[in-house]
Length: 167
Image (tube, rainbow, N blue to C red; front, top):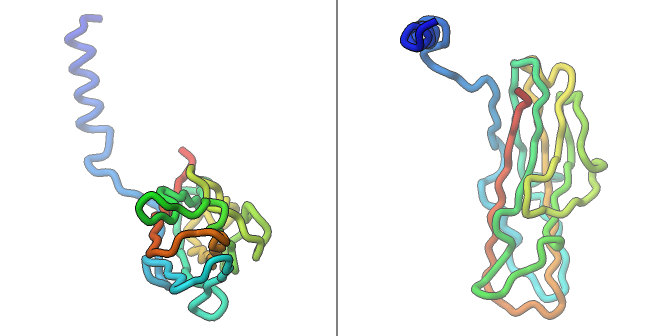
């Protein structure tokens, strides 16, 4: 078969068979809690758990109707730092307070603190009706421990929350 004919067939396939637009059929949203996690003023050696909405700090909502397994992950892009000073990543932890409408599995025990990591770490794996349009709500709270010899200052960190779906 001539090369030109193969290119023409490939072009027709792309033009008529593949969809004209691609739409994501899964969604992650932060519906309760602000985009900022604020521990307020803390002292050296202090440990603080925040849960500004009663027993949780933020609620993430997930919807997927692809009938595929999806994963909720978190990554500490930048640890708490102030200039050249930083707080060790293992001192900043997340915990799942509650999962609503979910049939999947939390990677750690509910209410068990897990440290944020510098790579995407698994929080939740979907299952069953999670993959067919049910809105899953995951409520998180956060814990921070300031080292005993940490220099004073205003520290900020950056976290990336991720939803990925199997292809």
